[in-house]
Length: 204
Picture 1: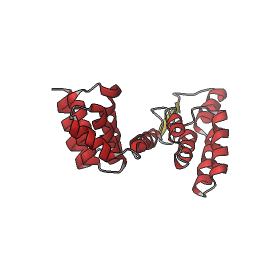
Picture 2: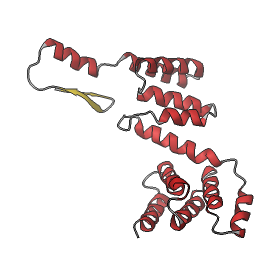
Picture 3: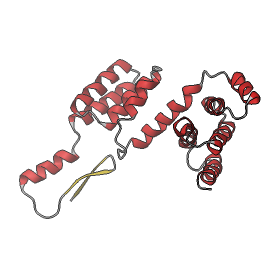
Picture 4: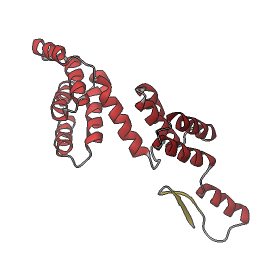
């Protein structure tokens, strides 16, 4: 007997089992109190009740501090309120194997990509013109271009940083490229092109 919840295997047993074991199996499959609260939070968020949604998500997390749907729901509320750092901290607590892990990864990539939206692009371009080896300016320019959706130009600048010095800024250029790939999707032509170019640079 196998039990699934949200598409993931959560419990199983083989052969005849005592009542206590069957009850334990059912408890693992049936929605928990944290599950019910998280779903209530999602319903309130969909209805535009941000305060009510936040309260439900917080209560869910008192029952299960790493409840994936509650963490994701609360992170979405924080992101909508412009609190990117708080949202990223919540997303970092979502277990990697959770059914909503991919949604959490995409939101985190979006938040990190938007972080340079206030950068002064003309000033960064002027720095690069004066000193093409200024990797800080090139990395920040790549991130600024990504923040406004100029992904092709952004990826070109970020790839050049990786080509010149992969470890610069804690491998920041490569990580920024991976975030863009996450936003675009694996089948996007830009993802396919620059993923291949990145691999050639990393494994040459």
